[in-house]
Image 1 (cartoon, rainbow, N blue to C red):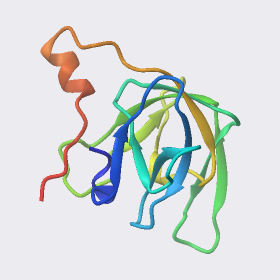
Image 2: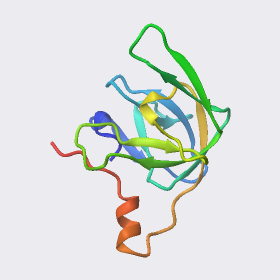
Image 3: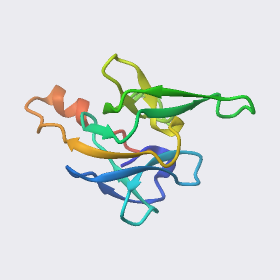
Length: 138
């Protein structure tokens, strides 16, 4: 399942070499869609997936105010989820090499990326828990 706010969208799992684009699903959130496929289908990424953007990653700070700034991050990141224990909150984020985490929903629309590597199959219950996506309850 992708982030709770796009639960009503059709989804598919990401695969190695997928070309993704940051897309506004019109539900109050952004997520990944296939660059060459149906933009209404959300591409769900598992925690631990490595992603390379074509350009430095850009996010908008203060996106609900008229005065906003754009911030740049490195081109590579690992997909993660934060605040998994809190319902009805955005969880999907990118973690950059310096440890910074940025919610996927705060990224600038239209940025393109490629899935470099999926996480290895979990060998322990702890690894499986970390890779498990937050499921929407409700």
